[in-house]
Image (cartoon, rainbow, N blue to C red; front, top):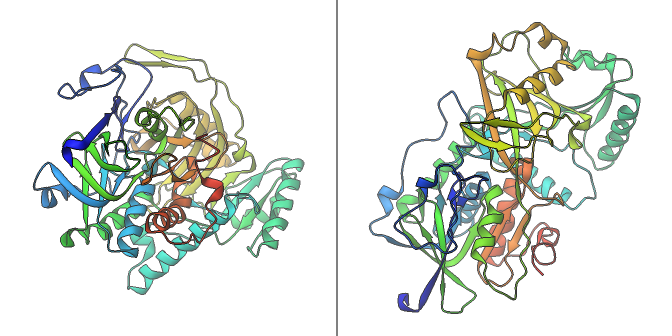
Length: 495
């Protein structure tokens, strides 16, 4: 069998989703592997971790590969590339719903990418009934609520285990026009059976005293929305997955970037994933869930002339500002300004540095989001930029977020951001952006056993469990609970 196999080798630099990625300059070229044959050699930069943290991560240091890797060759039913929330939950669902064995591959560790850099909103408030993502979103939320209930039934507290809080959400308007839009949204979601009401600026003071608006403003209030803590949630999912390691059904290959696919002859079936240290044989399926690096990986791997590849997943950079153990005031709900989906535009000058890449920040946009997490930290955001794979902290963006939130929460104007520097944390993540706003979930055309699950942008946590169920059903040959057609690659990314 091995003599008949040929290997497609890809080349780029390490990222945090289990792959080698193509950031936009030629720094750190010494990180390229020198002991492997590289086709189409490119000297590109290796990005830093997409999450900048000042406190201990919830992710443990256990390396299951030490328990399960007895040789350079390993065999599993399913190999998953990417250990963000999408890859982790796909592994979890396959382990729970079948007797298949699963390998999870990542160039770093979970929560070192976009998963760990978010606010953790599990919201319906800013979603629209009738859209193609509505059914997947509703299913995902149902599965999150079921998971929280199952944890409670086991005698544990979902708040402690997942950071799970029923905060409710407030979509906030500042103008008459925005208020009219929110009133229509309340009516629309109420017709779908969701609890929702519009609060005037005066009524809002009783729900959220620190949120101060003019009389034209108000908020759409959705009391049944949740939030969770990504690091606690990932730790819980990892722990559950690792229970299957003693049965020989699960292994983690962290700090091992995937560098190639192995195909048998001219077959459309992929037989293995080549990592920097191991060949991981796949008997049933390969799943690529690599966030914003998925597009570049698949472009390098698919070399068939009869397939036109257009997988336009790009990194969309976001900053969040976290003030740890914030005591000056308390927020009762998750808050987001009504214009979040459009993002109020703000222009900054291009930034250049001798120690880092030059990038164009003209596409920066910032909208107010604010919440208190399960640890009592004030979490403020958020920004969006299409600036490639750059993950450096931009202080001008942090200042803009602070100013924007202060327009809604005047109490912040009495706080000095400089004085809070010792207790602050800045999270920078790369959202997997795709122009049509829908993730790609499904079989890769031209291959019989390669599946993609990527392009969730800022909805990875919210859509993770629904996506995991959908991919697992595809791998297992089960009928899908949610219509998968809107997320298929054929017709959208392959022609």
